[in-house]
Length: 329
Image (cartoon, rainbow, N blue to C red):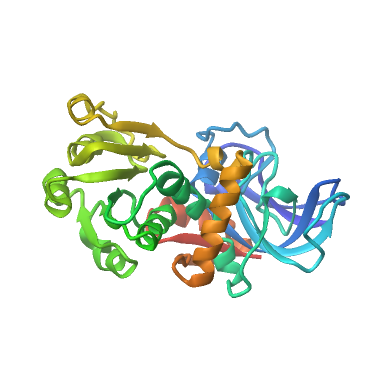
């Protein structure tokens, strides 16, 4: 038996329950992991509430990130043995492969032996933010030295990962946050510039920072009205990558900027990296090298014990976090 977090109805954090479940031995190709820490993501709150891109059959598990010790390996698994310290790549389906549990079973291709210098908490906070940011900025936009990149929702775990990745390749990260409350923290986290979208003229400030050539890459999780000032400040031939929709307001299509500057508007989910073995391998190489060198370092906002999963989700929905929320098991 192992404790597993599940929900039997859709709703707020209070629907999450800890249940005792029998976990069978791993089948061929699978790895079983004794979990030490879990990463908490907004996607899990969306699944729990019925607003995610995947529909949860009730009762349902959830969870996209975990780190722990391999307890058993299924037939045909090479490269892993019991006792290895590992973390998991976010699966395409968290309903099929949920991570919120003391003992989880995952396909071997989604398991990574992480640097031994990482704590369990840090290891559980790596793959969703860094894969998401890498896929957009490096795999798709080919961000490089001298580029300006605007990062919205900059205090999120993905936003902070994007800032670190931009610095790693010599680009200039412009962090965009709603108010100036987190300005100093974002500067300390590596942002070259911090703009408060609710307090400043965003288009004017972006143009002042990036100069006449403008911002080549926009990495946006917000959508809504911010679409127009962001696109207006972009360079000719720039790429606007949209990976979220935090603002419930309608998103205007920036026709004038798109036509006048030949912009590329690109929808993006981390799934396109995860489901492509070659692109995923390149991403893992980049991220593991960055972790080993110290160029990439997960930012932990707050840690909760396993028994406080409801409180962890409430904190997630408060939007007070700076970085990743982690649950220890």
